[in-house]
Amino acid sequence: MKRILQDLSYEEIAALVRGYGEPAFRAKQIFEGLMQGKTLSALPVSASLRARLLDEFEDEPVRIREQFTSKDGTKKYLFKLADGNLIEGVLMKYKYGNTQCVSTQVGCRMGCKFCASTLGGRIRDLSAGEILGQILTVNRAEGGNLKDRAVTNVVLMGSGEPFDNYDNVVRFLRNLTAEGGIRISARNVSLSTCGLVPEMRKFAKEGIPLTLTVSLHATTDAERARTMPIANRYTIAEILAACTEYFEATGRRYIFEYSLIEGENADMVHAKELAQLLRGRPCHVNLIRLNEVKERDLKGTSEETAQKFLEALESLGISATLRRSMGSDIGGACGQLRAKFISKNSFDP
Ligand code: SAH
Image (cartoon, rainbow, N blue to C red; front, side, top):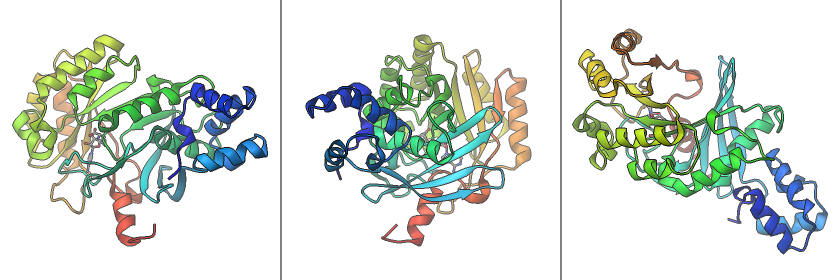
């Protein structure tokens, strides 16, 4: 695989152009062209510069391979990377804008028992440009540009653990928010982690005020370890302390995700324990009814149980919402689309 030009910052592209002996204004042409979602072959530069770039860099590092549209307008994408790997993403349409869910790794090695992304382990990390490329490609395909964006919000909740690919994710976030680029503000970005405490603490010092989201899914360390192996490494207490550090550094309220699993974490006693754990914290709880994954034997709760859990949390003073499931008719939980596609089209995606 060649290098990926979308990995580079504006300053790095300027240095590259300088190294080629090209005039400085070429850097802006290249950076803007890339941020508009153009392939290298379509960049508005001289033929000789284009040839030179194509020699060294991938023409189109992230390509839409398949696209599915749900009745509710949600779009699910299967992207093909330059080395043939597949990743998936979703675009959800809301009144206030469109939220794109991006992947940060091909597969995942965190091993959560309810998640489809982790079934085949981690294949490889995505580069910064491969994460950004998902957004640039979709923004363009949806008719957006740098001024009128079709993608207004981003969530790092696709396949992969963002903090297991820390440097590339931070580089991606800097390019996502950079002047002259697509400029999606950190305030419109949510990063979801299973709770890698050292990286959470490091991230608090990066000066990127996004919405930090932690997958909690349990109220005690022992119960958490039943579905999330990472609970054997870091305790809930350590996670909460890291959230406090992030809040102190950025002033941003943080979010806990709590997927309701029948017979596991969805009883009233869990709602009470969760409220006790989070009382007084500047946080919000996102409840999700587990999306059942064919290869796993965990069950989601009924809508009624989820509502009761929500009401219990609210009555105990915890800010919470039950996330409505979108696009369930076009491939459910994260990683399922890719898994389904790979099993159907064994070796040549
Ligand atoms: N690695 C990150 C991002 C994962 S996906 C993390 O762990 O946070 C985003 C959310 O979906 C996480 O909260 C994850 O735990 C949750 N999730 C994964 N599979 C799910 C499923 N089958 N049903 C409901 N939520 C699921």
